[in-house]
Length: 189
Image (tube, rainbow, N blue to C red; front, side, top):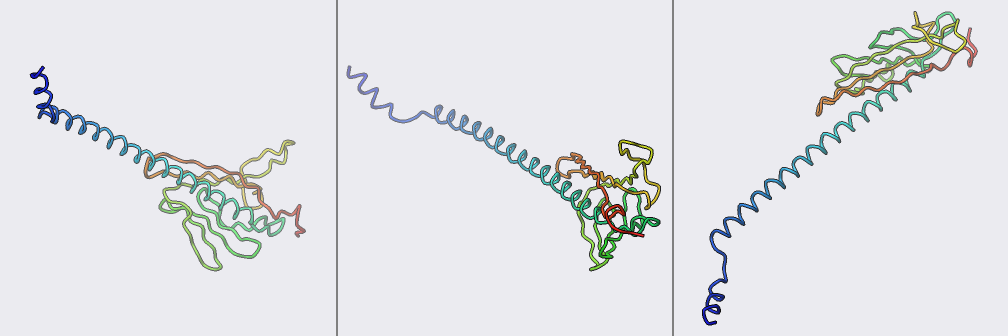
């Protein structure tokens, strides 16, 4: 009995082997934990950047649609006040006689005004495809065809493609804009 009592009093600390095993296990847990936390932060950063770019694309298309709806209708012979219409550039006049320029250069989508003379960048890493559509006069369903000039344009279809610089993901937003200020709603000559 005395032997067990003295044995118990001697076993009050940890052995070197126990301490080494504890330190190794704690190190492994720390490495795994840091790796998990790091991966979580990376995932959150990529998701947030992608969502931010998608929001930027939606904002840019909405802003373009708002401006395009305000193209000034001059008269039946001239049509709308569009001075340039290509696949990536549109220059037109609003009813308040401000000239608006929508353009993509060096993968930057810009929106410019003549008065006051300002140009702002709506999106970066962007490509813009504008299609100009006319109502098909032979269609009973209101089908559209490609417009041949400013007199035929009734719709502008916007396709904006942006590349997310963080993930490399391509974001595409589309919208079809019906032009306002037509002769049917406003008296024109």
